[in-house]
Image (cartoon, rainbow, N blue to C red):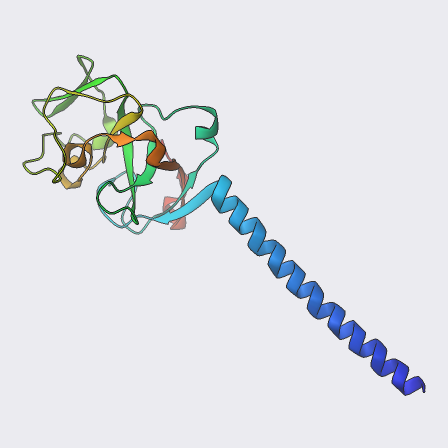
Length: 191
């Protein structure tokens, strides 16, 4: 009789442990989904377009909270849906916002008549691209439509950006890249 009670206790204890583990795993999955949906998304950088600010292979967090409170601003590094391949995410720097006029003059970016100070380009020139996306109508000076931003990679000689596909609608921006978290040697906030 006592042995049967021990077996029942042992069996219910084992079932309780399994249910506890399943509940914990479910809670972790729900929390991860909520964090990814509303707070931040990790990305691996696949190309040289943002070099030397972000290197190929770096892992970055793109946070979403900032754009719940304000619109993207010049200087923000943003992640957004690729205009040509909707399943791919790109990362570039906002150069101009809706209503501003962008021009490329003698290798410099000029916004609303003023040349930008862009130390993050390491002196690489910013020229128009010889080839643009199929549906892109880009001529300079270019007025950025309201509700859009003009984005460019920091590595101007290795980036297909708004010079290629045009302005990016703000509603395709998924977040503001804010932190390189891997490799540890590159760990730090992005600016």
